[in-house]
Length: 358
Image (cartoon, rainbow, N blue to C red; front, side):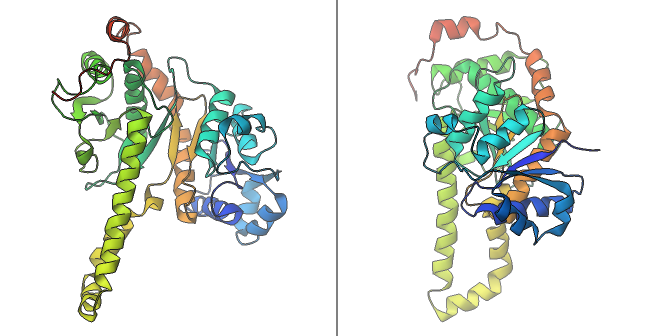
């Protein structure tokens, strides 16, 4: 099956053009049907393609020297959307020239420009950033929102649950993924009014291809007991960075322990297969590729520090979503949810903070 082209913001990220092009090349070696629009400085892209000649026939270059800086405010980036590599990659999706765009650049700018250019799908109030995190089981857990929306109401959380479940079904071929809301406890009385309203709506929903299992605490996110974790962007971003920081802490702690003495170094050699497995499991490049769900187009955010293998994973994610028509799947699930499901409870409670832990 022929796929729409994937636009690559070749100028974004910490490692620049060579890493982005190499990542696309790695992805194409696994799936030779991929075609690319490489957006960025033509001279630098051509130099990178010299190292991957098989990519030349599958790629077109859109020359652009202007780059969105990592610390640039989204409002300023939006004003330069027509001149930057990120903006032109997104515009290629808007114009139908490409089916998806991948960027390792400024997250806030990518979200702002994507939302303005592509708009949200009918039935979706706000797009959400969804990502994959490792678990003790075979498959990663999908988590959203990871920072796109700091303040959410119950309706937003229900929509996130629908989008996250659709994403999980595509990535892992689940029939009905297990979905839970992130909370400070698993009891029905715990959390804010917003969380309890969202839980009630999901429990009462029919026809959705998911198993809603109530609440999950943050220490259970990586246990493999849930397939989709739903939260607001403020809590989600904190949880994500806490998990990433813990992974780095464990890795650094082991490195220090294994180099502290000759006996420790010998112990490292004996246990090296196990430590290599741990390193592989915790490597963020193996879980790279956050997705802005809820837009009229596929936009994938690669981690800024991702290496070529990580970029390849992000490209593969975008292709998988194109193959399975993620927007159509989300729209179908939304049609199963009654428009008035949240109306009564939301109007009476608003975005109340409830009484927290009880």
